[in-house]
Image (cartoon, rainbow, N blue to C red; front, side, top):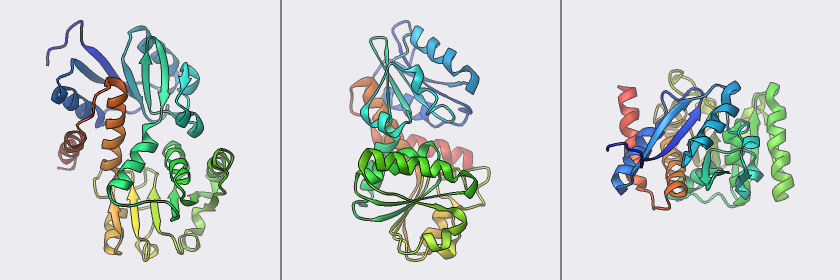
Length: 287
């Protein structure tokens, strides 16, 4: 593709962004649909976010993704929020609508689409969410909205973060959420139907660790690890051995990217192509 003065630009901002799958996914999708768009990754340190957003606005960037550590701190820099993003309190996708920056959260919908794609309906299920960061906000909210009975686990020292998410869900949806210290994981996982890891535990290069011992996975029907590098984490391998249906982070990655693509372009995203592109990139890293 030849980049010209007519080429529309999308981007991702975060720190780090060097290993992001998004440029490969989005540029492959633009090429497939025949759009004169390009997607670029920008490393933006926390103290530089305000200036970066101002610059993206001035350059009339069509839209951009927001990743760690900016998903919450970007909010005051935007003109408005989609209702779902406002309720969750985190943004991962921004659309430039005639100079006005509107924030969305495609992580939540992307997670749900991946879950449903695998034939898993969270309504009425007892779900354990490991972690209380930005990803947990999106995952926990959409699960509660769809009728899951939630327990959020986090380390004792960070339990206030889990309590914040629980209070947000209770306020917005009117549903109580259990908050449990990871130190009590063994008791907390009894009678759980679905386990979701929203932490980075098990991510490359620390791929040899798991947030949950295999001995505690027996009886859990579904395990979803949002970590996508490696594609099959130690947690997923252990869950498979324990007889659970497993869902990897690549599915959520592809869905959230496809939803962002559609918001920027108004076109239906080539989901399978984007998923395959992410897998190809990951296989290069793994090899």
